[in-house]
Length: 212
Image (cartoon, rainbow, N blue to C red; front, side):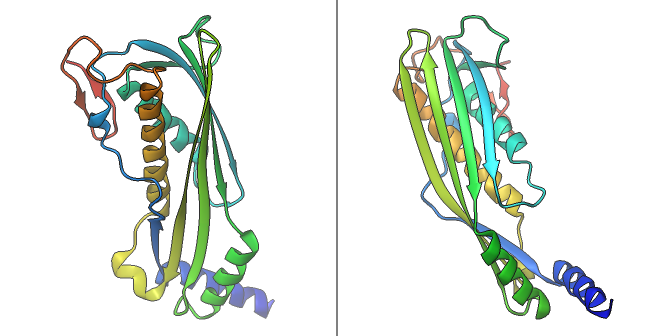
């Protein structure tokens, strides 16, 4: 009983005392949505998102992926529909996101850090990949792949620069989604900027489109 109480105290104090700092690997660059924005929705796209993760935690990977993929597609001129909502879409898109890390290494690193009250840092590395398969109305098929890493450190001395790991991962998935949307435009699956009828487009902070 005494050992269990000690572990509970160590875990609780580690969460309070330690600062979390997460950062991206840099393979996927930030993309400004305005660089591929199309004035009006010209193509109907049915989008399906699948996720696979062994990293645990409370991250809503499916929710953030769906949100970012649909936002990027809409900016790029797609009228996004759910599966079964449209009989004959211009394109069908299946997006798969994987988030993989070494669970054993994370547990060991976290245990060592916890027993030192985060004076010694804990490290977790996550490999994030996004794969997409697009099928157009004429039956043409295209595959897209994007991959990067996300690293997380937990340490007492990181409190002044602590950030949100979930936000870093979602920002990474957002840029993967924008890369996908831009590549779909390049391949003609979505309309390219400048080819649509001109109309004012304003992007809000969460990538919703205001066409007023």
